[in-house]
Length: 162
Image 1 (cartoon, rainbow, N blue to C red):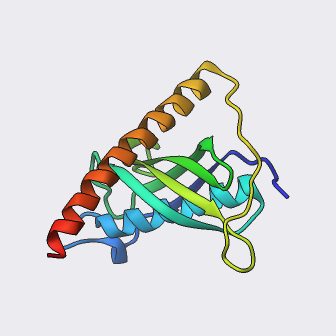
Image 2 (tube, rainbow, N blue to C red; image 1 turned 30 degrees about the vertical axis):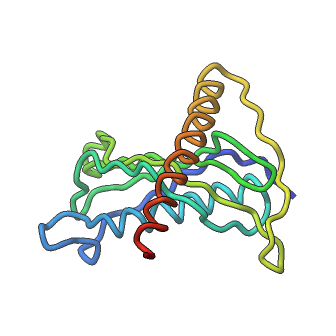
């Protein structure tokens, strides 16, 4: 059963093991954090085990440095019958100043599954505030764009298989 928890924030310090060859936190570590936050958010909303089916539009805006306090915020912005669109914002700051700056943002789509791994129904999220309605409308626009991109990619896959 859903707890109705629509959003979650994970907080932790960026560690030396997260660094790339350039001395900044590498994108793979950030993507892992995004996936963890998306799962926690989706599971909190649906009350079920959830899997990642899409992560897109990932924008790395600013680097994250070792020792930064990292906050990964995740919020449900659209629900289907079994899926949840989760907006993710990653922010970082020096823990001494706590002056957060946006470092990364994206959309992740999670699907709730049953014990056999089959998609299962979830509670509907209904936007209430104007900001919620804008986020919901944005998710719908992105779904339509992903469909078009998927059709174009399918043409490429068919061509490459020849």
